[in-house]
Length: 112
Ligand SMILES: [Zn+2]
View (spheres, rainbow, N blue to C red):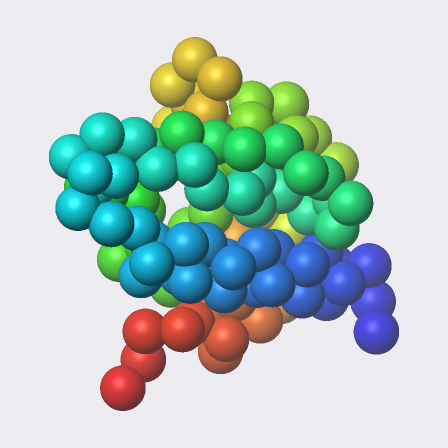
C-alpha cells in the first residue's frame, strides 16, 4: 500500500467514527456542538473538533471532503493527496484528490 493510500485509509477510519458519533448524538447535542474526532491523516491524532450537526452535514455531503484541526493537513497536502477547500480559524476543510480521492469516494459511508 502506498503512502497516499495509507493516508486515505486513516481518514476513512476517522470518518466512519464520526458517522457513529453523529448518529448517537442526542437532541441536546444536535442543538449545540458535537465533539467529532479530527479527520487528519495521522492515525494517532486524538484531537476533537467541535461542529454543529449542520456544519458536519455540509462537509459530509461530499464523498471526498474531510475536516481537521488547522495545520494537521500539511503532510497530506505536501504529498498531493488533498487540497484545502476552506480554512475557518482552527478548522480546515480539505478535499482528497487523485488516488486518495478515489479511496475516499469508494469508502464513502452514505452510498446506498
Ligand atoms: Zn489531527
